[in-house]
Structures are given as structure tokens and as C-alpha cells.
Image (tube, rainbow over all chains, first blue to last red):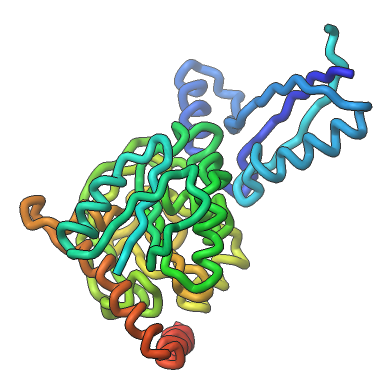
Length: 85
Length: 242
């Protein structure tokens, strides 16, 4: 089966995110005063095959730990959908 | 002695490094291609600055999986000196050979300027020729030079005297505790953001980088004399001060 996976990689809350700060400042200068904080991360979209959701989840988790995220500075989570193919 | 300078796709300080080691220091230098499976019997390895693999994903994230990195890790495990400069430092952190990570400068700017570094300990392969407290003027040029590490690991680094270089006038990039360079627990693997290889030639106005490279001569001759006891004693002394 084919799956579509969206991996979200975000800076850990303890890590200063100067890009997010700059974005929040820009939003403030546009008048969006309600913005309390902005944090920037990455979205990685994967298309891949696998037996089932569980198998895909285990593989993607491994990919995140080994390459896609650096757990010293980043957190990750992902969503799995069956691909319409 | 013989140095190996690793060339990744996107390295751009590899030739400057070879010039510093070969022409200025007068040592033998071989270039190690990222696809090489061994380190060709060199005594010390340098991972140079640049933008390996285009800095895609994260700086150093792809380079750490190059075939040559397995050989570099093996060289490091057997006590061989390894220096990571700038992108090389980022790669060593990604590879887990050094603790921590390097993230975007707090200023969000690419910073290219001279910095004054304070040598914090002589107990590493790349500071063995310096004295603790010595000030060196070495340039930085990076966008992701802000050193971060977990709190427990940071305390451990400080306690064990493994912060090798600190920015003497405050970190230009937001690095924790003004850290510019760190060592592994054995002292043979060192990474730093500033570029000693750009500070070796009088034509460029500063030669303070030489002593960092030359330190390996001191370190290796100590090791060759079986003077690991002396090295260990120096390490212990510097750690008890810290």
C-alpha cells in the first residue's frame, strides 16, 4: 500500500528561535497585536510504501530519529494517510 | 606528520586548510574524498568549513552519513586527532562525536568578522601548544554558529574542562556561555566555529591560527612518548580547576 506522510519538525521550546521572533515582530508591525509567539519549523512530505500504518509508523519514526530531526534541538511528529493513487 | 583534509561536496575551505597545513606548517597533506572508505593512514583529520551537501535539512546532517565519516569516527575512537572547523564542527556534532548542535545566529545574519578567542584549556589536541588564558584573534564566517546543548551536558562540559575556546568579548552569535569550541572527553576531537586556517599567513594580517594546528605536534609527541600519563595529569589538573 502507498502512504502519504507529513513530518513536522519544530524547534524545541527551550531553543531560541530567532526566525520565529522575526516573524512575530513583522506580524506585530502589520497590526496583528494578538500574536503572542511564532515558531518556525519544517514540513517534510513523504510518499512511501508499506504493509500497514503500524509498519509505516515504525519506519518513519526511525527516519526521524536518524536523519529528519536532531533531537538535541528539535521535536518531531507525523501524520500518516493512505495515498490515493 | 601527515594530515587528511576531507572534501565533501560543498566544502569550500578545504584548499585553505591544505595551504595552512602544507605550505605554512610544512606538514604532509592528503585530501580525503567524502566517498573514501578509509583515512589513508593519516595522523590527523580536518573537516573543513563550507556548506556540505548545500546545508540541506540541517548543517552537517547529510555529511555525517558519508562513507568517509565511518573511517573518521574509527580514527577518533582510536585516539587520532580530529578537528572540525565551522561546517566541520557542525558535522562532528551531527555525527555525535561532539556534544550539542549549532543553530541560526541570534542576529539572523551571516557574520563575517574577527573575533578574540580565549583558550580555556591546553588539554586538547588542538590547544596543547597554547596556554590557558591565551587570547587568539581568529575570524568567524557563519550563519549557524550559535552553540546549544542540554543543561546537564553543558554542566558536564564545564566541569570536565572540555570548553576549549570561548569568545573573549561575548558571543557574536548567541552561543551558550560564549562557547566557540569544545572537545570530546578524551580531548582528541575538537570542533570550533572560528577559522584558524584563515589566520596563518602574515599577508592576511594575523597568524594566531597557526598555534591551533601546531598544537597537534605537541599532542602527538606527548602521545608518542607514551606520555599519556602527562596528558591525563594535565587533563585532570585542568578539570579540577574547573
